[in-house]
Image (cartoon, rainbow, N blue to C red; front, side, top):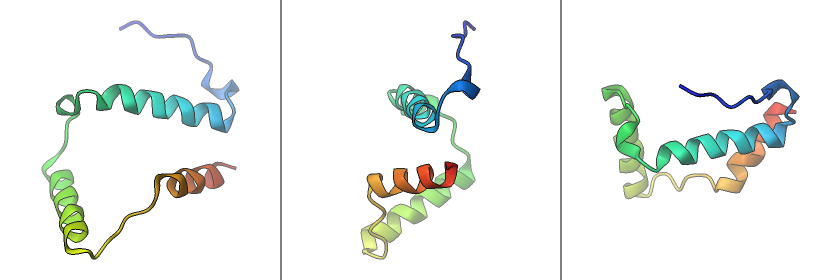
Length: 73
């Protein structure tokens, strides 16, 4: 496997998060290629059921990213 030379330690927090996003989006182009355990499937099904019942509205993406950035400071 070819690897790009990236010195992760030299990246600031925003650059690291952007790298994570880039990697995730590259994986998400083919969701069937990402292995998911039975336990993970069950957890996802339960979360979807809560959303369908209206018991969980979720968290806006911007809020999630703000929480992550604040933890990394």
